[in-house]
Image 1 (cartoon, rainbow, N blue to C red):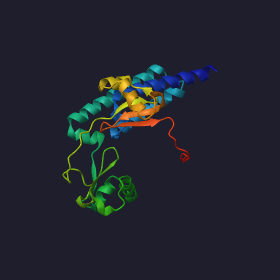
Image 2: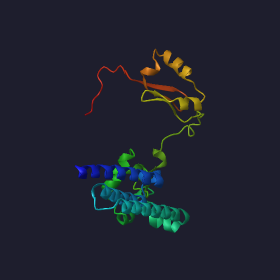
Image 3: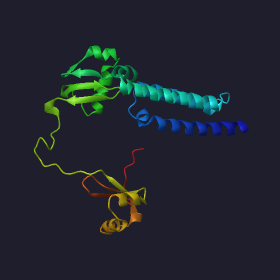
Image 4: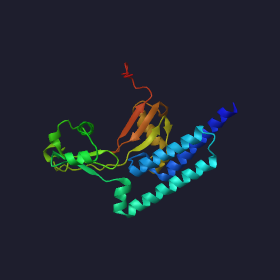
Length: 235
């Protein structure tokens, strides 16, 4: 029984330690991962996993190892920021896969990127016809960026010479049924104002699951009772 409790506590400690390291390294490590972020993440995961179930490993050794990994990763990040040449080696560099609508076979072979992978990446961007693509670039994080040919690009308000609307950052007012009073206060809004808006719909704050003021200052509500007679179930 004592061994089970030991694994339990070591696992909890490993998770908390991993969370702390991730917070120190920043959001980049868990978002658009470069070579450095990938290696760092794999190494940290391996070390903390060993801490969780290998009782022969001392806590202090694992902690020291994670500290060294974290400091090394930060130093390499600083070096890559200051040196373009080192940044290319540490984090990698983008590779052009399509230029002028033509597939660059040599570049594809260089990064071992298959036509199937390219087709999939294009479909994920909503492109099913290769003729629509002017440029395709494989980024450091493995994501393919696409520039469509001019005739296939979407028309914007600027193209149509329409007057643009002023947009604001969305503000969440109610989340999971809980009123976010700080957001109301920071944006010059009050609980009474929100209650007035809800009364016009015959609702109260307790009826709201989610409420947000959108980019056009419009109020968007989602209520607990959606009045959907036969909800779709995709399971």
